[in-house]
Length: 266
Length: 266
Image (cartoon, rainbow over all chains, first blue to last red; front, side):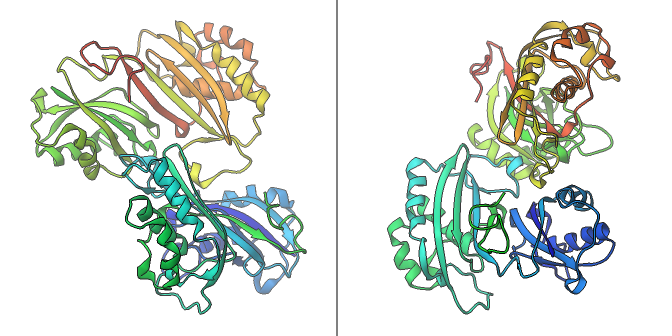
């Protein structure tokens, strides 16, 4: 059995998820905390890479002993998040843990992921929003938000999203299936939520930057389909900063992982 | 004329508002920013002290040249917040500015202040709540929140609040008029809002700690009046941490400051 953990983290403290030689990463913090908890180094596999500064509400990772060896612990699984949180930095917290079969893979078993992007839309910046959202000072009225939502609908479907990919990725197959996309306002925040079976490098941030250009009248919403069809990054809008991006939810569709199919996640 | 500024700040970055020899304070950051903006040192008067780690949604401060000399600037007053924000650290932001008469005093002209205390009530800590709220892992159900609200009503009125004052204050008159107090839940947060003509040292934090002890069944809500009557700090509950405390709003009732009477604040 593997231990499956649900984690949230404030990405502003990290150079992304993936362990690397230089810079503090979420994976390295998990390595340190799990080694302290279990008394030996562990193998940790995450559900996704996240870029530097990107946050997670729900990031899934599996933990085993080294080389996939079983974990031995006397701590009941429902107590593990609290105990692990003692060893984790304040910027990461475990919120749920359960044992899953060995053939469950937190990345390959993903059926879809949902990202949420948070815009802070008020005339002046707010200290409580620093590194947590993208500050757009220009007023985005109801009509502008409706236009963003209209434009976002053009992202829905299965297509080649090359136009929404930053250079620097070696991915060959750029076809992704976006199952839902929507934009709405709550108070001073404008949110963009997008769910897909996978995402290309900077895909959500390019979508978000494009939607803001739509809101500001720089890009007509109904031009999105032809822009996507160019497969050319230059046809889309700017890249939104990492600050406002949250890996919101990971969906599994694995019959061996009861409770993790589709929407049945905590 | 003085320049009146409305500021918000993330208190976790500061050793309180008031300038001091050791430690970074909000006032010192304002000194640096206003000197950079106006080209000379300024006199800054705040509406209140706030303790180390306490936040502000709306903190009022007036700015003049040294010794009360008038400020000279070609920047229109409605553009001043944005320009000042360039010079302020990310943890402080100006949100509003206006010219007020010289006899306006940001502290002496205050008619009342409202503090809001934020509890994060979920089983595990959340990285986005770190230093922004008080994490109470025990579930506070609707009945517990109702009991807190009931207990909070006993704080309303004009009385000696010595029982809600930490030692270390030299204040002689401990009578304050609490005009409103309430407790409510929004999602994973429980809020306590209290408005009064003034507050004693740690008063809101002692009230909040007491209300949490009420919620957890350690203090009966109807025992609050007799506990307050003892004028003894030991009769109340614990002191809640600074992390969850926000100076939420400052009310003025000064006929020389149009737009600042009572509820007529932005």
